[in-house]
Image (cartoon, rainbow, N blue to C red; front, side, top):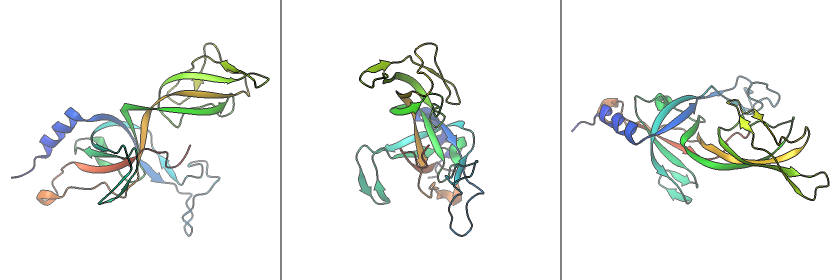
Length: 211
């Protein structure tokens, strides 16, 4: 019996999910001897990694961990996921520290921002905003704000109910779930002398490098 890459690819297209992929690159600012990134680097902002613009592809989800566990290949944390990537998917070239955003999966986010200072959601892909509020001048009551629109670059725009400049406010909504490829793999399936069978990649649901 010989496994058929085209049949695997067809199956993964049928049962897979739409995914945005951002490839990771080491920043040139990393110090030769220490391996540390420059905190003042304007390119990576001290993270030591850079990501290119997202491109859309697809992959099959073969495992999602709800509870932490320990398996043969190591610890699995809550939210870990395994992808099976067909050879005809653009994600077939994925590697360590790459970012993936699942366009068929969302989770809740809630954070505090300051109007006119850091109020931008460029670090996530928002599906919707459900609530905005802040404290009144005396700090004794809640002021409900309007729901802003979010641009493709994360800029927030209000039609009504906008917080005043300098006001610290809470914003809550749903975002498309973002993962990092945290393992040194992908794992190639090398049967039949290296036939291009689907690759397996482990991804983890947390912000590996912060905002």
